Image 1 (cartoon, rainbow, N blue to C red):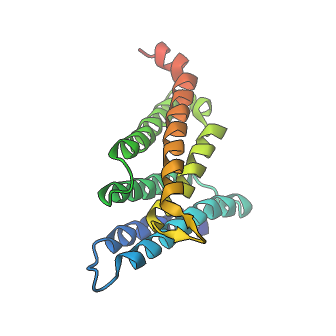
Image 2 (image 1 turned 135 degrees about the vertical axis):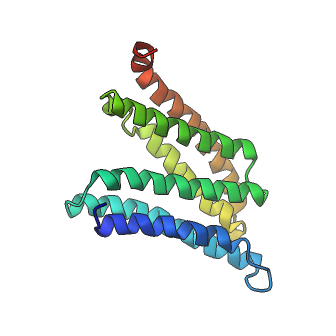
Image 3 (image 1 turned 60 degrees about the horizontal axis):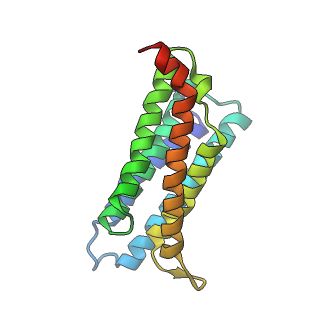
Length: 189
């Protein structure tokens, strides 16, 4: 396991997940819900920024590694899944949205693993629709975590619209990747 700055940032994101989840189990007397929402939002945004930053640093410093390429998307998916499950528990996201997004992540991760094993990983490389899906999620989730007006804007309402957009993009991107893999899927029945 290569130790470098990008991998350290990725590990930091993974370590933040239990802190992020644990916030919502603190008694109101220790941390009021508005503060829980604010701190969780900040943690999620920091995680999202470090996701971009660790990839940038890995390329800029020539510190890319197979382990980093594996761990980075795992950290992202764990953070998004944890956030969505919390948002369902808090009544801010419909369970079906969480199932669609998390289910797609599991499906496409498995598909990518299988395609790599048959030597066709490039067929399911990250596409623009996948990047749009990720962007919609990464904007919607902090809005839903914050759950209060900001600068006169209803963050929860905007977050709800964006999470539905993210779910639609999730299904679209899953269809796109499955279509790209279809020749291999049919060839290996």
